[in-house]
Structures are given as C-alpha cells and as structure tokens.
Length: 170
Image (cartoon, rainbow, N blue to C red; front, side, top):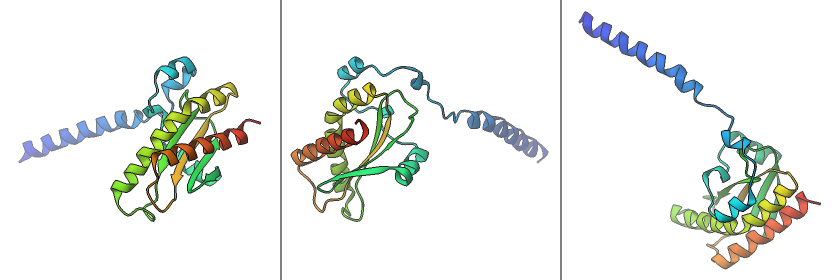
C-alpha cells in the first residue's frame, strides 16, 4: 500500500513538472512575422493557408467590438486595420449564422463558397495592402436566406473587396 502511494506521488510530481513546460509553450508571438511579405511567392501559392486565416479569439473579439463593415446583397465584410501576428497583409475568417441555415451541411457549403471566392480575390487585395503597408483582419459573413450560386458569391465578394480597398486606401 505504501508503494502505491509513493508511486502515485512520483507520478504527481512528474505531472506537475510537465505543466510549466506546457504553460511556457503558449507563446503569442509568431516567428513568421519577421519574414517580409513576398507577392511573387504568394502568386505561386494560390491557396488559403493556415497563417491567412483569422483564428485568434482576441483578434476576433476586437474585430467585432471595434471593426467597421461593408455590405453587399446579404454578404457582409467586417474589417479592422490592426497589426497581425503574421507577414500576410490580411487574415480572414468566414461565418454563416445558424439562425438562417439550420443544417450544418448548408452552412459548410456556403463557407466553402466564401473561402473559394475570397481565395480568388485575395491577390489584388494583398498587393494593394502591402503597397500601403497595412494589415487587416477580416470576417466575411453571409446573411442571405438561401444558398447562393458560386457566380453570385464570386461577384459579391469581389465587390466587397473593392469597397474595402476604397475605404482603406484613399
């Protein structure tokens, strides 16, 4: 019985010695932020990578509390000019409210459409933001009543990007 308690204490000590290392690993500074944005490299990579997606809760909260928005036919683009923890000029997130689309498959399909439309428009956005030395956090929200066609999503997202650039770069 004593051996079990000593063994259990040893395990507890081992667990507690691991916890400071885990706590220290949550570093908020990104190592990629020291690398400058390279438009030529981005032209070769036409994907929407992990570093280009807005996922930090602090930035999302700040985006909705302090951000501004532009709208176009049920599509809303909420934006906030701020310093981002990446070398990309913009980070984007995508949302479809459960209020309008009860089925997750519909919401996921619309988010895929939004991501694809944004992916095609981001190159022009990145070039203009990089030239102006600005970084922007974006949230693209669809509040329509029915699943949009791809051509409609593409058209509206491109118009939102034009409106955004008109507001940011004067």
